Image (tube, helix red, strand yellow):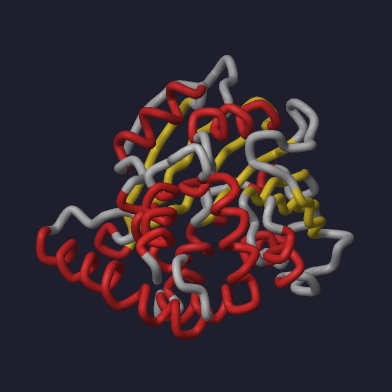
Length: 256
């Protein structure tokens, strides 16, 4: 990896103006190996995290409704939701890296799971039309987090939930040290070897390091207009799950 490439990855992770184009490019380039690396680098625990996030979506209240899988990638979340027993609704899977969506094509019938090439900041979805939204390991890649949160709020029906599943930094000093060594030293090497991409798995850990901590993200969700904002940490703080709702007249904000 050249100094220019390393600088580009670091700048994108920090939210530089070129972040959008960089993220779109690298995820398009690593799409063929993305699923393999996801499961390998997380030792498969990412599947469990996704199941927990889907359980918080509250789709059982509207099993025939419309749901958004934001930054959908290779469609793992949308597929898992579409296959839940009792689910009879539809999932719109939006991502601006078309090769990622193509890599997940066939995981679920298109009559239930519809992939859409779209930017998270300008979704082609009507106001107040989604009964829930979820994003797994993608919100940190959005070029403008505040604008992205407001865009999701726009399309939700009142009372609908938005679930964010994202990697985070553990609070325990011992776990944090081990986590950072693996994430910054081991994972980029494995990712580079398997994916063949020289910067993608350098960008990923740095993007986590630059992403707001759990309490800060909860505050940004409230500032964007979400209520009943709650969050919990998973696997010793390696990941975190945030849940917020679109305002209704009976909503009361709170945390747990």
